[in-house]
Length: 196
Image (cartoon, rainbow, N blue to C red; front, side, top):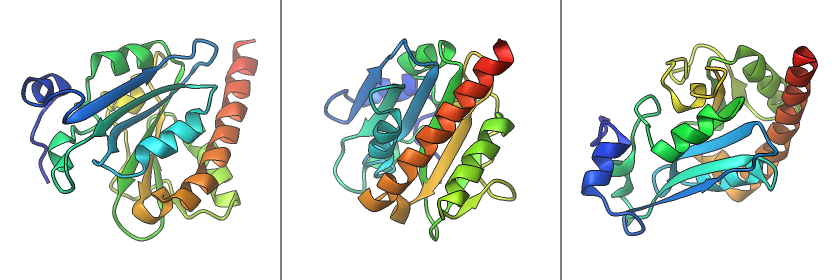
């Protein structure tokens, strides 16, 4: 399905903040990690909540949430490589690691993508080790466009999770978030060791 808007700027000319959509941007300068849910609220249900669980009180968080009545939020979907909200781009540019959280259809699975192959593999090992169904290759969510919001970090690469609807419900979110948080902590340690 084609997006109604080709950019956030275009969307903002027609939709009304706090009526049609809401933005949450929390910067935690003590963390080099940004968690982004660009299709939250009623657009891809459960992604804002999962992103907030992963961010916790440690990592920066950006959510764009659809607030329209059921069935009308699809209008607010701006594909990830066109998602150019200025606050989100600024947060990503100041972050070493950006992780996008998305929703998709289909049977129980988490599809991993993004240009940061090391982070993708670390996430895949953690999630599959926790018994969660994961795919890293051969799916339609590769996340490898350099303009994808997950790849807009200061390092020019990141990762994304495309999560099916069943795993975005509260039990699924509760299973996924701590695993992802552990993987991010391990990755930050790896980055720190490499820099040192």
